[in-house]
Length: 282
Image 1 (cartoon, rainbow, N blue to C red):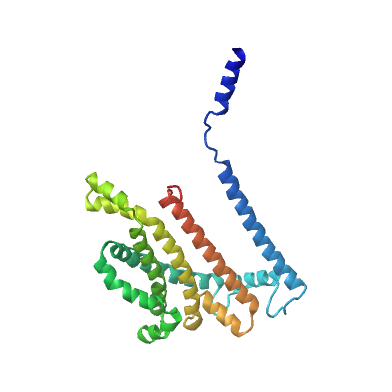
Image 2: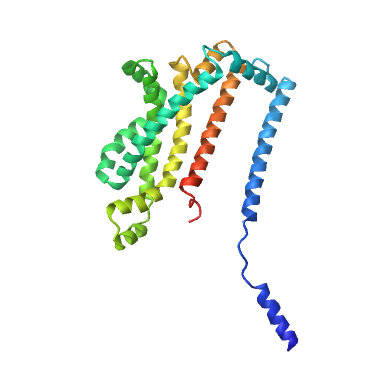
């Protein structure tokens, strides 16, 4: 009897439910970060080796030390009629204005396109037509219409950011399950409550994804626009350096753009954690 009782006690204790542990997820995130850092270190080491053994001419592939030295020189003394900070702020101002226009116009229109078939039928065709064109294809037309000032650049960037944000908002509305809408209506929710409590929160993940795509499209279009018609900005600095074969300055501009892209992406991830903490958990 004692043995049976002890056996029963041992069996019940071994099958008792345990609280879920968060260590595997944290260790997985730490492991992923370690892999990413190791990859970055490997790329930098490969760059050092390629420059040290002159696998390519220093004219085409400067060493990391030369790029770092030139970074300090451009920061202190400037290049192409402006310091590195001046060019960076000029590019940031343009992309920020374009993102603002894309969000203010794209999100409401995309939500309306998802909610109303008439709005979708009217606006989907012109957006599809211009979104399929490369931005540089209609940049000359914008320069003819608006000149070579800031207006043409901001409009070009706004067009590149508007479409992905608009389509993402529309897809977000379409992804809302009908069961969730019907449940809210059966509980007596008004149309405003249905939109603010069900549709908009459910569409936020898609909207955030569209913002990430819009940032990438805006940065690539920004550099292209500044290469052709600008007197400031990182793209203008890169083109000016390329004309004089100043490859180290070109690398400086590319690295700054990469840092900006990483900063934007990190900021979007932070916003996702704050605005849609339920993403990936439902």
